[in-house]
Length: 261
Length: 85
Image: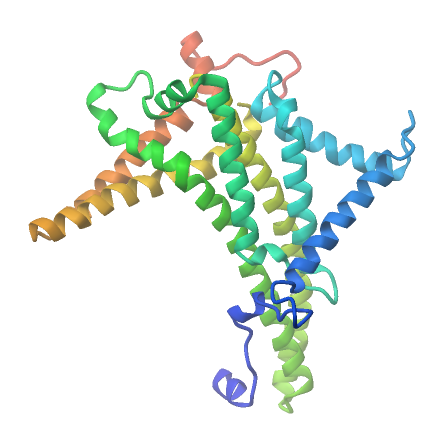
């Protein structure tokens, strides 16, 4: 059945889906992903402006939502992970990362848009590089260059003969593996989710409208229902990935600024 | 670090295994090519994974709040007042 289905002319979505064509021919870098990122920044700015425009003791809906979001990041991620002594310095970064990733991810389940910019590896990569610079600079400023790397590479209470094995792993982890896994986790989740939704939606559309076989039409209807279920699941994944990215950033900063990490 | 970061610690722990695998697996590949042998790559991978696992123990398991309290008290962590757990 699948063979005849493909032979009928169904073209499944491929990796080229995350490389949308440019919007203006003369500006090759200005594509749908860039446009969505710009709109996201605008949406976040307007939302936050509206939330704090008229601060009141009894908050309105916008203020309440803004405060809820901010308190979640400040207390739930920043203070709990970094600790009450240092966390406030990093809350602006954590809040920016969380809201920026969340809004950009939500484009993936927005009708008529259906494209999460984070499915394009360049965006998470730049965010991970920012995180790499921040936690290393924070650690070096707090402890000094020599002590920071000594603290990272030589764990107290470990036999000295193990250091030549563990030290390179620690060094590679803080300089390369952490930004790499941050990038890969966000990119892969968004890319896979986007592909999955596309397969469900285009498959359902093709089976319902293009195929004459009644069994395939019924399967198309079922696929359409599953596409809605998958969209809800994808919504959860998108929110969760924004949380995980901010949480891991806080964890890395905590390790860098707290002595004896 | 509070308990809320446990899942993030587990996520971060995977990085240690990956780093160990890359470094010692890479050294194994290089030595195998240089010395014209065939056992050093798998050996490097095993050593790298074990070393990464040991780092996970040191950095994540041993450094967890419960383990630290246990180490200090020599017993299971005390329950805070009003802590229903």
